[in-house]
Length: 376
Image (tube, rainbow, N blue to C red):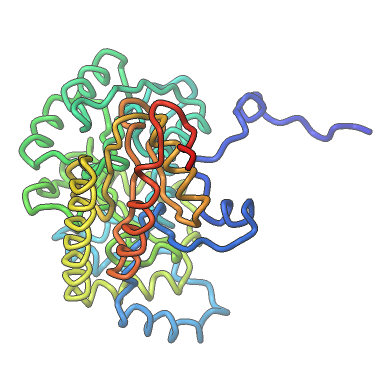
């Protein structure tokens, strides 16, 4: 039988891969539900009650297409950030926005720069649109701003991706350091500044928003502190001409009405975000104390997760497997030297205690560098 129409050479040559293995995949593989879901960096404290109520009310209008311009939400986001609605684009999460930005700026063979081991969805989009990736190793478990800037200049990069605070480490750079980094970038290089975790960060982390600088695209989400990961909604802040270019190619009905209603209501409840941030700060301290009590270190974190340094990649893999066997879903960075860590999402008090109990039981029985468990 004929094999069907040919794929493009680009698609034909791409590996069969996905950026992440979902927790649901582990449940299907094991045939049982997870006990603790601590690897996806979702907000385990939930969305604002106002957001839940708004989503329930919006269900009544589910037969209608949502406003493709997201005018009401864009107007409120513009007010919050002190920009014009024309400086805002609403997308189905930062993953969607990354694809939009790569499509807008990357031709076949165009160079993009990122950190080795950084958020992999960016890489997924660059390869998917035929770009080339230059990866810069982390330095002291943080994005190396000097090396990223040098790579962008040396490779003639069209775009640079930087998450601040960072995923998967949780580390961060200050606004002052970022502004100096931006100033050093070539005039024709675009910075995709992923600020998914910015609500959890210290006040000196986010640079002032300057939409006059067309080289910078700020990316925000309702998936983390706002607790709307399943709704899939995020937004970008950029120069008017950049947003206009995105409007040429974005999926205009790509964000559903329930998500928009929830996001708009969540913006009206800053007290809930403050409560979530406080609970996460408390949970990070618990994880840090757990690590110290076992003679381990944690990486500094301005996010809703903590990376626990177990000292060896083999031990990290063994711990990951042992935790999954116990129904605990966590993740670990894939690239050295960060692959000596496991990354754990901050949960509520009861789930943190359960994780602590299981981790204390498992950790002493895990060998390094062998991936086997000690017997007896």
